[in-house]
Image 1 (cartoon, rainbow, N blue to C red):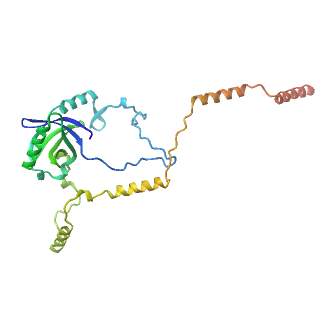
Image 2 (image 1 turned 120 degrees about the vertical axis):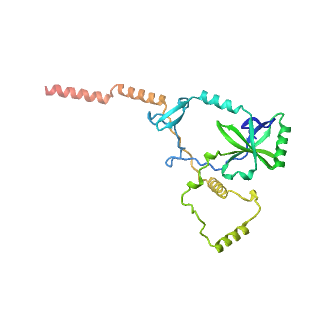
Image 3 (image 1 turned 30 degrees about the vertical axis):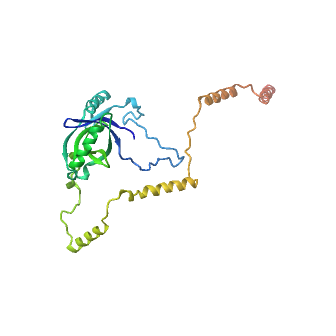
Length: 278
């Protein structure tokens, strides 16, 4: 499993060297965008909004727009220095809380944690302590140049770190439009709804839930592929400078060729005719 972060987690005087591994993966089917005329992939180029020319990667700088049209430029060295200063710090668990106190809206991405060299015993200690106390740890960590709040908990005998949103990153529910302020339902309607919920209540078994749309899309793609309903992208014909040069040379030769015998005879006849008339 690929390691995407190395560091250490500490609580109190206990320090645990750990590695982070992405726990989930995006299985969305990525579709390419083609030109309907020739079925070639569409290119998305970085074009300057003023110069209207393509910008190369080495000519791109990062900046913060503090007001419309005004920026503070941050060079790569400044950003890299800031990132390293924070990433090299040990991640400290700052609090322990009950997970039920954290609403699911805060959760973002999950990472598996494995012990690095010399960290197995401390890893086991934290895992056992979290299981016995039925608590989770709250810590701060910088991943990909962003400081994130994270929950450390146990999942199937493995420590996991789940990044969670800061409160100011969660939009206020009160700002959602058209939400009724009162429940205008009858007791009979409520009792019927609760009965339906009871009848549909079961034990959560994640294996029985599948992405039906993704499965159907894969089947459609495979049926088209095996049925030869495929297209091939057209390729751009590259005009060689050598070809252009040969064409120019040939045209030049044609223009400087000696006149044909027929043309010379016509000129002689025309000259004789002029003399006779004279």
